[in-house]
Image (cartoon, rainbow, N blue to C red; front, top):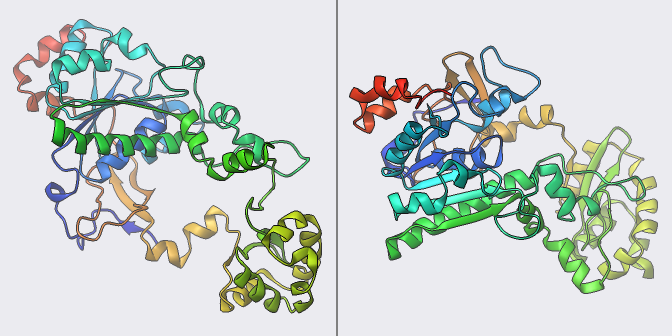
Length: 411
């Protein structure tokens, strides 16, 4: 079941949301930056998406399938709770209009390759002269410094070069990338961590600062177990399929009618695990006596368990393990999980009204705040939908014609 956005049971009006009163200028495109800014908007920030005229964010047209209107599902998924203004930053008039926005803003987010913002005159050093309180987050492929800084950065490249892909996949069957873009989304989340830390710091210093986040460092920074294993053993971690580097058994298995996962991550759970599968003899087997020995003899253990689990169904095994207190669950596809009672109970599918698409579905809020729950206050904006509204807020409505004639809104 999906839930209508803006649920009337919400406890907090928009002006009491945690980030209410903060203005964010979103210069970013595609995923990492837009995701970062969307989450800031969900928490109440006034996010103004500053887009190139005519085409807008690349993601509006980039995906191979569309909804009814001009924008792709990918754009709709990443840009709720934002307003859109089109500004030609390559024109002097466009930059002046943007600078007027900067004077009213708290945060700027961009995800161009290092150096591009400076060429446009919208880099941190330029904007801090206009507004010393500005907090400026740059999200790039590899960061603003270092020998790889100028490399183009996609999630695929970040996963490959950070080491993540070297440790993923089935042993002997080649490397795979994480289907969830952890470099992109991780960079967006870590940028928020930096931004909100800087907002708190600004309360003490009165000044903003520059935040340098990257897809590469997000992917590497999430590699806690893998880097630990390398430093402990001197050997680069190899693919393990669904298995865990620190515990066994802790992976996926095949049942008679499908697949499930189970994790016996400590000795107490291992005892319960053996009782569930009715194999008390494994508790006395020296190959599986403790976690260290089970890790050393993982292949033999998995081979043995594979035969055991084929004797019953996914539902039966999962229920039996859960009754014994052993973590287990089926491997759901997205159709199954999105239609599950738990997703409905957690309101992780919401509906919102769009002026072109009608009612669209979106993922809900993955973190719940008790006193100030997040809200969808705005649909993903049409390109330039809020040009007049934002110009009026800047007190420039009487200059609208002159700005248009000077090329502020077009190439």
